[in-house]
Image (cartoon, rainbow, N blue to C red; front, top):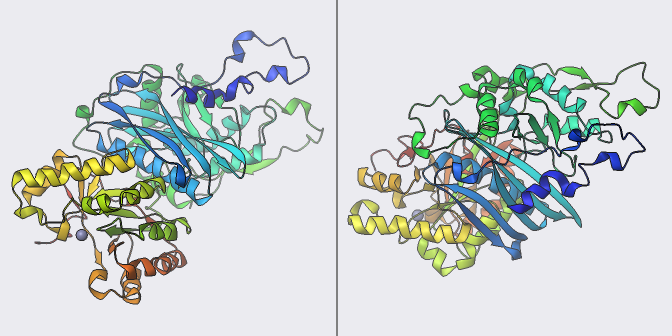
Length: 511
Ligand SMILES: [Zn+2]
């Protein structure tokens, strides 16, 4: 975790701009304190531990992340960010990929983590900070823009530009401010320092130094959750997963449903602001009779994940692997910027030990499909428990964390199965489109079936079927051509995931 502080102030050279300029020595010494996110005691988050994964062959040196016992949706938000970061790295063939984490907020209402990734891309180092906030009232991961009120976004962008370092490029910053927060876009990590000032940190390819907006200026711009997050950074207190509420309003805390819709669709008129001169303005070239103006655009998506409120999203799922050709499936999706979920079988993982590790390093989602593929309803309590526990242990070995989702073999679920799934903190995932690929063993038929997937569909295929591996590139291409996004199950935003519940509701019918 020591690497994080270094990432925050870029080794100290970025924090002392006075050294690079001529003179200007009359500034008060106090102003040279490096801007950085609050350093909150990790132990305030009850039940926290650390998971790690690595796969040097796939360019992943070491990825670490917090695991918070009992807080499955907080863990899900961290998973989404971690996996999306890994996919992004795999897509550009980055090497020596690393992820470290620090705690930047903790309270009964809000938890904040800063995940900082580093990689070598085309011979150059790249540092990308990603802020993952967790709102206990909604049970959702909140991205930086969710800390800011929708209608305050243009003011916020203006403040960011106003407080930029002298040599920063305002166009680059403005572009990044219009994008979704990293790792889903180029947007900055947003959080607070220990005094409650806003801290905005971009990827190193946009801007090295973090930007600070003073708490007094920030206060009128914060969303209701932003106010909670600010307090969790400036006056941190204990978070306990037990304190999570049963009744959730999934949209309200970032400022109401209208906020989400407007931020999601981009229908709003883009706001135009004048670029503030910033600290570097004094030495301008003299063409100052007209201030350049700039389109700000609406607030980017406030949650961690894919904006499936605005986009058509489907979840392609592959069961019973890993098999010898599982990575071919991953690469087919990865090469098109898409994702999948694998429900891995314990027995198959033992036969192909590298398979699940590679899936994890590619940033694809792994769920449990038990160990032996028997009908869980007909097993003894002890055997049923073993199927969950052993499969979770194998997946944790491969990916550094226990699975958050499971699919029952044959879709066979009853009250007893749900009870054990709940105990293991897994949501149960069914399907809405069954390609029957194991029966037809025909790539054309699988393609036709999978192509029928509509918004929020969960499609069932098998990565141990050659015909399904053969069909994968065309399945992905078909989705991309239709403008449909293939997301992981955990990225489907329609669901308020709960352990032991079946999703989509009622999809298993009476089976
Ligand atoms: Zn199966």
